[in-house]
Length: 112
Picture 1 (tube, rainbow, N blue to C red):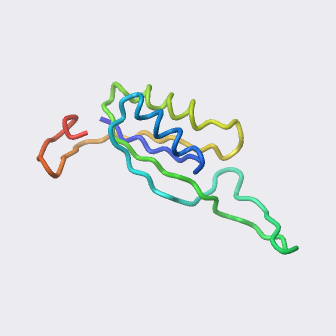
Picture 2: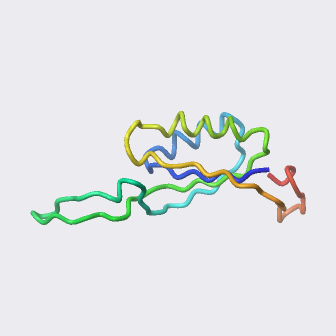
């Protein structure tokens, strides 16, 4: 089992969620976050004054998936979230050692 964490642009959330549902992702956690990557934020003009926006709004998606489905989920996120512009985001994959569904006590992949 793997935990896939994807950081995407906020306006791509609905498209990504729908696409993940179509490839069988049954649940995910969505968090509004802020951050920056290589672009280090950007400069904006407000009432004639220039200021630096260090942290950009992003959406963090987290989902547990069986190991054999990881590549398909990654391909779906990349295809749908890609705008070909800087700041499209990143995907991180980490191992899940143990999962327990609280309501039923199911463990492992059955709990996903």
